[in-house]
Amino acid sequence: MMSDNCIFCKIISGEISSKKIFEDSDLMVFHDIRPIAPVHFLIIPKMHIESLNHAEAEHQNLLGKMLLLAPKLATEHGLKGFRTMINTGREGGQEVFHLHVHVFGGGANLPKT
Ligand code: AMP
Ligand code: ZN
Image 1 (cartoon, protein in one colour):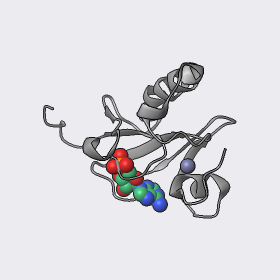
Image 2: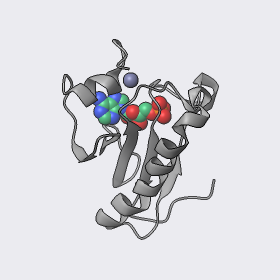
Image 3: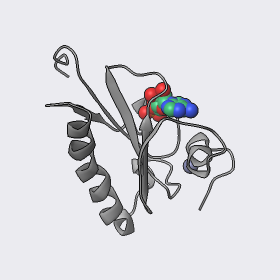
Image 4: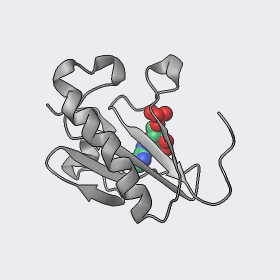
């Protein structure tokens, strides 16, 4: 389940520290180390799934749980609106190959697209 060289698996195991904001049996959420907005956190599954390209039908509930958590935590962090982003594959700008949903917002309105 855990992937040896994966930085997010190391965050889940506690080997690398993070500013954690939520954890349950399936998911973990922590602040992005290089925020692009006043509030910027990452929702990740504890299970090592490389990217959305590697998600299967069996992960449907997990993916739904990740998305439903976004508005809950965004509200808790004072956001009235927010943006979600999932970068998939190198061509999609993905740098960490453990599935994650970016949630960010706050301050001025986000630009379109
Ligand atoms: P992506 O380009 O979608 O793969 O984004 C990876 C994100 O992970 C980037 O926004 C990084 O700032 C963030 N990141 C990388 N290492 C860490 C870390 N140790 N703790 C928190 N966020 C991280
Ligand atoms: Zn991982």
